[in-house]
Image (tube, rainbow, N blue to C red; front, side):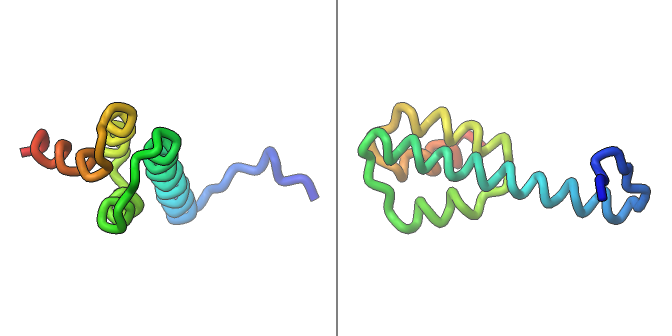
Length: 86
């Protein structure tokens, strides 16, 4: 059965699907942050790893990804962004 052209009508389903996609994109961004740090041979402590993986804010994760490209210690990724947010 081909459902490729089917349009879901349930608002609840559409909202749940959008939330699921958003979580998946956030997880991919978080993994990208960790990947950049790993590729640069920057050790990642457990606290930083947990904070990155727990974040669901796309704007914050984008900022962290930029920082991951230039920091010398992984904790600087999340600490600097907290200082900027204040």
